[in-house]
Length: 577
Image (cartoon, rainbow, N blue to C red; front, side, top):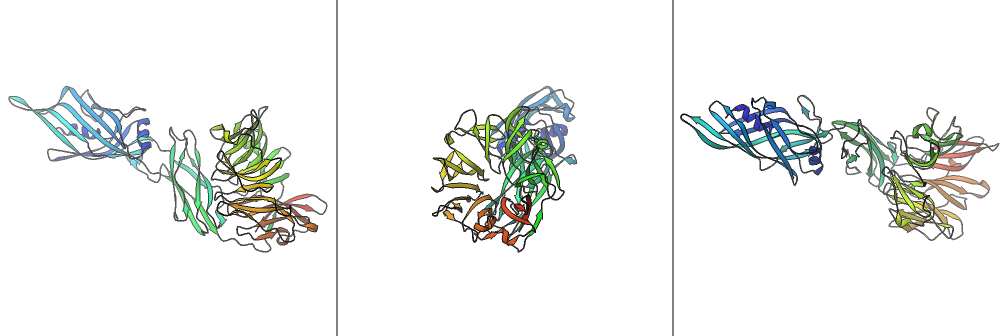
């Protein structure tokens, strides 16, 4: 049998898809198939070929192999019809050659059979090559069971051409197809690398970014942990037409140590550090005064920057460089006012788009904010999901995310004083009843009242823990923790104080707030994850300044404080325990 014809048959083997449904879809959507090598056996002789590109239009599994494209002097082509069968692609063909392909005394009249191929998505860590360069495809094609090729024709031995039908054994092949593989540009964690260990499971959010937009159907970024027994993470899909996607890392209770989150896509690899340690309060802690910030701060981000409200609108301040940037320049909106935020940089608020008032949703990895009309923003969670009132239908609520504003019919007529969410999808709220708030938890479109005491659920973390404040038996506001298995547990008041409210909670289970301490006046405090309370006025002193309010708490237990000078002017500090 002619060697070139055998190579032609080998080239037909370039197909595939697999145990992963997305791989088959990608082969269908992609163009061209590139096979690296193939091997077949006929009449006891083994034939090997490789490095051929087979043309294929997008939107089909069918392929056509021109014989001339493969260096065979013949005008015909072999047409293969592709169909999905479970986790494989089956290409069938039954092609009469006209005119007959003649090679010496051999006359080939018909090619028929089927090629069965498995397709596997190429792992993000892999760096396969095609022709000595990185392959542009995301699907690896390998043999599946059931491939058969038959050659029919005749062998001319004078005085006649004697007919034959022979089977070609498909030994192996390896090919690539599908869609271009977007390269990983970066991976980052919202929370800083060093955080306090927690007695319960905690979660850290992160972002992966590609160098180019994800193709139709999205792009998978592989994620793994170097310590999977304590730090767990799963692959994430970057949606079609976008460059970034968020993911969540689960951290085991009481774990201390370090681990790397390894992300990979298109052969490019990036890493982000997670580490936890036991936290202790040192006395006295260091105090850093915020400098050159023209406004009132109200929030701390994981990267160390401070949100503040200035005369020209809300802005970001970097304590290290002492530089500020207006949010309007980042959001591409005017007059932005932040209503809620997460440490990872998810911001929710109100602004103007042209002359029209809008709500906005933005994270630091977006080039501009998403705008929503006719809604009033209330609260946000680390996954970028926000709660908002529908201004066109009083009493109705909407969930805001990157897909738009969708209704939440089961929350209809609820009145909420506040809302703050966790990465498990829950929102801690103050549920208004008879004009008095009660602490409650909202999950999707259901509501659970945590206590009949007047008060508010202020914040919640992914473990399900909720903190807030409510009126105790003496009618005074007192902090509480609520956990699914323990219910509501009152937290100790700072020594010498009669009441206290909660301001902020971090993922390690620490919270901060301000207490009423009689003659001492308002005093900020910090409570750790086991209930130990620290009066900040007893561990932090600054000459001529009285600290009167806790404004925010970071995941490294840094507290943003408001103080008063002797002449009554506001000053702001960061306290680093």
